[in-house]
Length: 112
Length: 115
Image (cartoon, rainbow over all chains, first blue to last red):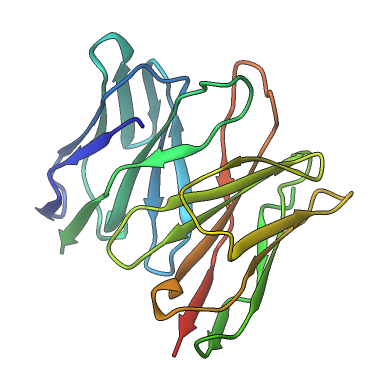
C-alpha cells in the first residue's frame, strides 16, 4: 500500500516563530488532507489539498503532486497551535471512496 | 450544520467482553469510515460503509464488524476484546463518489480501555 512519511517527528518553537511541516508519499493520490489533532483527540480539518496551494489565515499548504510531497506552513505560531499534525492521503484504486492512509504525525510544541 | 458525532466518549471493558460504538455522520453525508488510533500512532483504517454495506476493509480481524443504518448512522462492534484493542476509535464521514472533492470529516472519537 501507499506509504506516508512526515518530518520532522517533533518540533519545538518559540511563540511567534514560523515552521514548515513536510509530508512525503510513495504513489499518486486522489486526495490529501492535513489535520490538527487537539489534546482531546479531535481531528480538525486544516486543508483538503490534492494539488496546488491554499491559505487560511496563518496557515498555508502546498502540494506538488508530481513530486509526491506536501508542505504545511505555520507563520507567527501561537501556543494554541501545539498538538499533533497529520497528513493523510487517499489513493482511489477501485473507484469512488477509498481509505485515508495517515502518516505518524508531527508533534508541535509552541513555547510562550 | 451538525458535525460528526460519536458515543460514548469513553468506555472501559474487560478482556473477552464485547463493545459497540456509535457514529452519526455530518449532515448531508452518506458514507462512514472507522479508524483505530493507538497511542502515539496515526489512525489506521478499519472499514467503510455505504448504502448499508461494507465497501472496503483494512487489515483488521473478523472480531471487528460494523453496520450502517438507513439514516446513514453506523455502529462498530468488537467481540472478544483484547488488551491491544485499547485505543481511540474515530469515525469519519464523507460523500461516496463525491466528485472532485472527497473530504473526510472526523468525530471526536471514543476512547476504549480494555483491562
